[in-house]
Structures are given as C-alpha cells and as structure tokens.
Image (cartoon, rainbow over all chains, first blue to last red; front, side):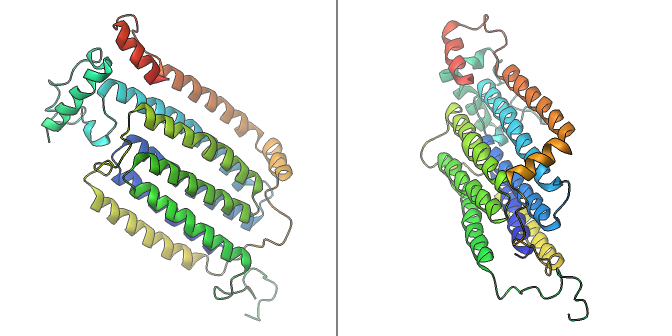
Length: 133
Length: 201
C-alpha cells in the first residue's frame, strides 16, 4: 500500500476537525472535533509505524498513549462543560465572554448561587448574553 | 529505475494507477470515514453529530485493521466508539441540547474557519503527496500490530511511560470528580440542589 493513502486521509481528517473546532458553537461539538483531530494523528502514527517496522513499536505505543490521553481529555472536558453549563446556563462558546476586555454584560450576570436554580437560571444568562448582541 | 535494484521500497513499486485490493478497500473505507467526519462537523442536529462520529471512528478502526494494526483497532472500537461517544451523548443530554434542528449550531466565524481549514487541507495534501509519492508499505510480511508484539513492546520498552500514563489517568479521574462535585451544597436550597445533583452526574 502506498503511504500516501493513509497520510492523505489523515491530513483530510485533521482539517475536518480543524474546521469543526473553529466553526462550531456548542462546546460538546468542539470536543467531538478535537476527537477527530486526535484520530488523524493516531492514523498517521500507525501508518508510519507499519511502514518503518520500528523495533521499539514506537508508533503504535504512542497511538495507544494518545488514545488514553484522549479519554482523559474527554472526561475532564465534559466535566468542565457541565460545570460551565451549571454556572452560566449555556454551552455556547461565543457567549462565554466574561473575561473579555469590555465586559458589558458583567452587571447583569447573576451570582453563582442564583444560577443554580436550573429552570429559572437557564434563561438569565441567555437573555443577558443576547442583550449584548 | 533499474539502476537501484537494491532499494526495494523505491524501485519496482506499483504505481497509483494499479491499486491493489487493500488499497481499494482503504480508499472506500476512507471515503466513508471522511464523509462521516464532514457530516459530524456540518450537521445541525447535535445528536446526529455524535452518531456520525461513531461512523467516522469506526471507519478509522477499519483502516487500522487494513494497516495490520489489529490491537489498536480493537482499542479504538472499545474506547472511542464504546466510551467516548457515550460520554459525549451523556454530555449532550445533560446540557439539554435541542433534539431537532438547531439553527445556531455554527458560530459566526464559519467563513474564516472554512478558509483556514481549506488552506490547511490543500497545503498538507500537496506536501504529503509530494513527499511520500514513492513510499510503499509492505503488508505481506507478518503483521506489525498483533497483540503479542504490541504487548511485548509496551511492557518491555515502554513500561515507564505506561505507568506514568496510569498516574495521569488517575489524576484525570480525581480532577473530574472534583470538578463535578458541588461546592457549598448546604447553602443551596434543597430543590436546586436536587436538580443540579442529577445534572452533574
């Protein structure tokens, strides 16, 4: 098999994931795109390991390590997403603008204890986020 | 080409116009996986994106099998298709993602993202094809990725990084628990604590 086939497929998968990271709005969809990029890297590692016949099996071992790190990353990432959703009531990346320089929506931001009431609290940050747009 | 008979990788390899069966299967599965990946990043239904991700990751697992890396393929099926997608679906469910078509799945910087991704794709594909045009993977020798070989390499040469990785997984587990635990649960009213309790776990 030509090495160009897995290399080209890996490059295209990586660029698909890159588009997803840049263009998606939901945080979980961004995480899915990150998974696509990691898979592209894994495909490259495995293809080059099979090509080079490395005595240490470095490519496949590193692919296994990358899979484990991706699992850890998705666990931590989803915990952060759930925490952000619980505190801010949204999981859209372009509404999380509290640390922006001209934070105009800061006075309208309810404290974290008030946002814990989910049915009422989910509208609060949403309307304050839309009021700035 | 006949001057270098001692280099079997560069001399006498089949061209792109006479693909073998493995190559045809690789291209077909690759087209399916790439199409599923594009559907993952472009669909407007959030749950469908997770299900297309299953197809894309399963296609990549089949590509591992075609590259004779069978252990990686089964690990891919177990971890990615089995647990990561389930975690993502749980995340979509717990953040109350809309079920139907949501018009704001894409943010406003979509043309910039298309430009960056398209430019990177063209650059990478041209570079990779030009670099590895005459490189040939030999798949007829014994498999490079059987479970025995991978296990021996992992527990002889890579055992220290393997243990460090287990410590990292433990740290990630503890971190996820600490992040999803409620601080000050006693100060919150009981009904709010109840709703966020099943929302956080």
